[in-house]
Length: 296
Image (cartoon, rainbow, N blue to C red; front, top):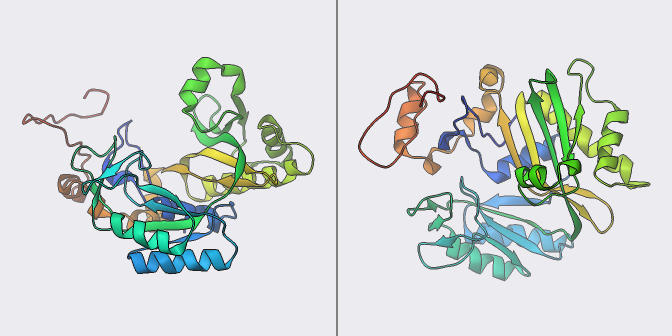
């Protein structure tokens, strides 16, 4: 059964209860053989320090501490206490402990949370990786091709929409027959479109195939890796991911839905979902009940 980062899309609306945490997404990718940074989630500053020490003992040169909430822009966010930043690059377990204490239990406010922010109850501690390139890779269901399509670009670390507008030739697509599955020829072609050469092509192709296997096994509708980074040694790491799943497959992907963290959600969303309703909380005092997000 597939377990992972859920961001389920219903008729174009993306509600807060669709999300799962970053550490869950990375755990899922690791399960399928996708290369991610080593690390663990922690509930307390003491646990975070212990994880950091374990990483240092295994030769980690940098330590990354990330607040776990259901919103983007964490690195540029601030806490209700005045503490700045929900993502920190640190050097010692003691620094991890100090910064985790500043994060845990407090509300992180980002451009996506609203002024009230979200309370940080967990932090992710993982090793840092030194990289020389940022790439873009996505696998999605495409109606035009009647199946999966791999979208790749050597211009990662920025919105793919900007790349499409400024330099459409930098985006490459590779359709995959869902019955046949991805072939080594196709994964190699995608790897080369990303700029891999020589001995590094095979490793990149293997990682692309692992992501495709995750996509199929978990009934995903999209797996987006941005950025996909390349280390100085040519290894590929998936640093961040957004994964969406087919809600019609809930009956066989129950583990994904059980990982829902209602503490990150508006209580109104939680209540509405109990009755199978999609609820979008907005400002004001006028409610709108519609059949279909397009009409709304």
